[in-house]
Image (cartoon, rainbow, N blue to C red; front, top):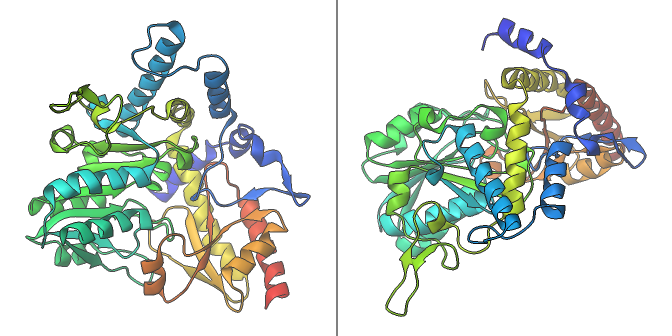
Length: 416
């Protein structure tokens, strides 16, 4: 989208109307207005989602599937309706490709334990980038220990960008899987997923995309991206915790063995042997996250009421404003300035540890994340032990960035 189109779209966005839907944003912390700049860790929830969850528990709750009474049928209907909402939201071909999990972490572990152990052998290669979240690194390390496969690294540039030519150097005939973030949770870097998919598929490899940040900041079409797996968590998408999604191509999911055993994922159980239910039930053992899934459906409903182009323009303007204002803080160094980045910004302040910064900022009501952000290989590559991180959402404002800058200047005076 060009600058003129972004500017026009931003004019159509009423952030105060959005903020009115989020009850927590009107509260105070330490007698200061709440400035919540940690949405990349977990987004706040609109009242529409909160009310849906309350109603599900107070009026319609029962266990799903096989219950021959109204409450069970209603709960099942709402639970499966949410699956269809997810399907449409990411443009999957079928609801059979939508697997509910506890979160993106479990979704990646599912693929590693099921697809990985079935199809990745000693000497096979898995390609990752330096900037992966631990959730998209540790499961593959566990698989490496179990199978003897090899992890290959695509390095990150100093500005936080990742070059497609570096993928071309690493992806080769022994590559069986490429697993990458759609958007970096530390740097906001947006990876070229379509181009990565072409390179992976050219050598017969599969592509898994960690979409935890991507699903929030862009419209996702899994068919257009041409990936093979796409995972995300509900709580970063304005929905509840305890719910995530694994999307996978049906033809691939069909070949994968169950991840866990238990109720609801079986066709038959006998001492002579068990057989499995069809998709997606095969991967959903036990009582599922019923209300959480219904809440995720409500979050998707809420997002769908917004002008997604206007939201994107608003978030683009926020990160541009942050990149302009943050350097006004003496001693502050931006970490991650890749072109086209999403609205996540890490930084360090000379002489002040990020944890100390975050603690002092809290006294001003400003919430930022501090630490290695579950990305220790990236921290090592960048030559820092930790950063502070401000992350923005559709409800964030330029005034909150002003409050962050003022609080940082005050914190530096106290700490340095």
